[in-house]
Image 1: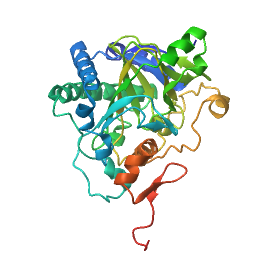
Image 2: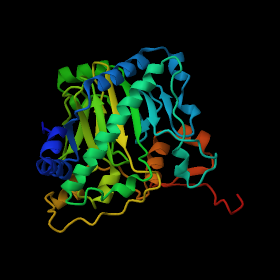
Image 3: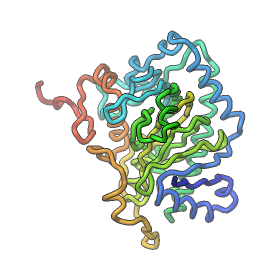
Image 4: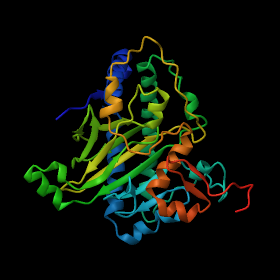
Length: 358
């Protein structure tokens, strides 16, 4: 089984050129790597403990902040509510994102409707405190990795800064996967291909993702033409992958790598953090220097790299983000945004032009 690169953020702080070289190779050839994040252990442990407490509580506690109540796609979802590529995900989760004032119901452009407040459980005040603290560290770490990516591409350190102005539209999930007995049976029989799926294969819509995972395993990345396990290394590491924005911005030099989660015999907890551009950002390919060598086999992208059919990578980040949410949560999209529709390529448009009669 292929092994993904493992990097240490401490190296960026002590020997940036060395780290940038390792990062360039990881992101050009794999689009996926594990990173020792150097966030204080207490911050991480409190976030995980509060997440476990949230999921351990009863349905009434969680449904008080149900996702269906939020036009901005925030809140709690039970198992089977979210789907990936049309198949239900086998996990429950809490969706959180950058806090903002809610826009008018028919705000335009449509992506502005992704702004809004989060929903927090009133009976667990420690959850917000722990997640706010963890998010602050993830924002700083992600900005640091972004600077390192610029160095890896031999660009000025602030080359992508306009994408994140006035502020990143970050997102975070707390995700709990119930155990699947069939996963244990498949493992005993050696039938990994028959294991049930917790989350189907997909790419992320933003710039980069930093995922904290517990010891249960199950995460896989599609790299070098095959699915590779991403084994847990402990809470001092995050799994990092690039999103569709990074691939578009680099003209394909950086890979938005598909990934999935296979169901596991033991319960699984993960905390993915999505470092995204501002909703308004329009992503155009960066002027990469001529001396930046393309090392990946040209045939790989065209013939071997898994892609979801009918998934346009939209240059307008807000439109790309709304595409993913509208597809994954059609009921919430229809209930709160009945004037909108998703076309075959993923672009969200008005059902009829606002200046024409219906």
